[in-house]
Length: 203
Length: 289
Ligand SMILES: [Fe+2]
Ligand SMILES: [Fe+2]
Image (cartoon, rainbow over all chains, first blue to last red; front, side, top):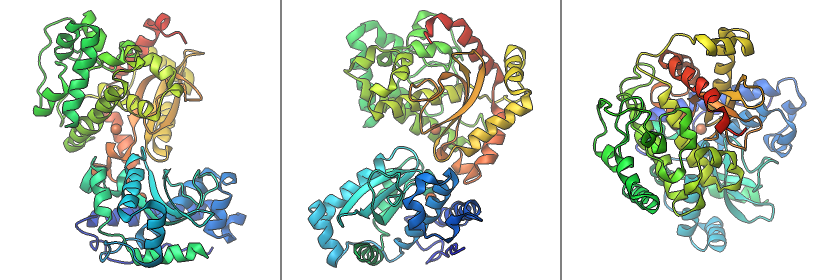
């Protein structure tokens, strides 16, 4: 089995006041942990065990639902923790900034598009910035724990930034005010990491 | 602002039909003994205490626009819908569901669905359609109707089947039907809990009556879908529903949905569920299944 449950790259209270300590702790040690445990249990003894997450997602329509839900839950949270940082915020630079301007017109226009995707996803899900098969940036959202790498997804690509909009991601602090949580998220985005993901996805 | 515009929409839509609807809509007596309030009024009085009913619950006025979770709700025209009062105080469901959760759930989430739904139907043909017709033709309408109509109706049912002194077990015809279908109450309890616990992401678990056989069945639906929507593989008449969106339990239970589901039974008002079961047979000729 080549999968490991990751430590958070910062302390549980590091993202205060935007995401509170209790939310981070439960989100990581309970929700994320449960996805990981159920995912590894679901693939144990099957030929998925030796595959990469990318390879599993590419044929997720053929896998049991437990692999889709828990594999997605495992992978999505890995990405989410990585692209957040207590020193995050601001705007991207370099190639990623250029690509955002080319695709969306401006950083502000991109933000609006991403905010809409996150706010309008009804029920539990994620908003994504991905690199599609033509190496263009695209913004979309997915239900539950689906993601753009899955063959069931209608805007396929490689996700380089994701925002969890399940209620568990924000309810303790923001309750029904999802837009406030989305607004706070921008103070935490680790643009260095997103740029790194972007460069990797272009290759 | 959203609340104000929701109120204005309601005035506008009711005026088109009948000037008296405004009066009815603002003072309708609900069968559980509360004055239905307008969106604006109840916003300023979040801890409304029950008011003794002075009119018969069976008056045609209440059947026209008041949502009570009863079978007649399905025949209310969308344009005449009124946001119903909570049938108990916010702390009535303690310790199973905490006061803060009930308040936010009712006053923000549920009210939000109602306001969005009324905005979405205003000035459209849907104003004159009953909830039953809308749900039965849901595939014809945009997602905003499906999500908000479901969100509005589902929560009306949810509040109506709980009570401060709930708990116990069903009896009479409903218990007979449960035993017929599931073998025993315990087997039913297990199957319903499983449906509620295993629904992945946001959604609901339901006990409904099958249109084809008149017998009970258990399903779960995603998001705010409902067993009466024609989007469902197996359609039926819902008599019991539990909200398993995280907002229904997260402040108290966090990731422990199973605890919320198991505790829910202690506040379930089986008499109300029995009433809905009887409603189905009483209203059979109006449900052109
Ligand atoms: Fe999450
Ligand atoms: Fe709800």
